[in-house]
Length: 304
Image (cartoon, rainbow, N blue to C red):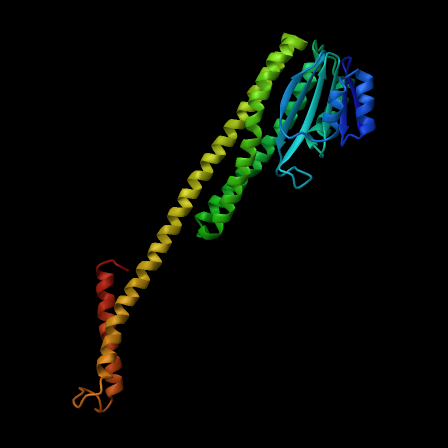
């Protein structure tokens, strides 16, 4: 499906799950190199930027988590950037593009500002809107982290091991996807200056600044996860040590008491207390008294 928008003399075509006919129509309308037809027909494996005779072909992958409409962890957007047109192609529902399209429709009617280089402006605004969505997802992950932190200090350390692993894996996926943007955007700045002029490289440079903000946010969130994991592990170790200490002391108390009982079970001619009135209760009382003395001693030494 093709959505067409116009702004300041620039045509933006948004291809949603492009069919072969959609791609052919675009190729013919803008006289785009036929090699691009195969690229637009299916998702690409890696991000890249390529300069053709009079346009730039750009592939970027964006991390997807809370706002994804599928099970995929990334969303791809392909860009074809010419002097007076811009084409985007995607293979999943990208909310940021829908939002920007509505904003552009309003701006084309109400905005009276003179945008001297609208192609670069539209490209930058699309990228900025997608990056804004990523910031929203990172905010969601930050809230997730705070919830984990609260549960850790409420004594739910064991269950938080799995949650910490999940949030760490999600942030790792974000970073791996976003790492590729730096090299692509730097190359785009150089290529864009050559193909479309200095103004385009300026927009790309501003987009790079937005990229660095995202990378810094991801780094900060990953640092928090590391700290939370260390804290969680320390609390788990402390609880484990406390349990081990209590069990050890209980065993230490039980062993001598068991020994006393075993001594009175020896089948000998002379056995003190055995056979005397109330011998059972005397024996039980003695064992209890020894246990109380040992327990009191451990408490006095602060071992319990």
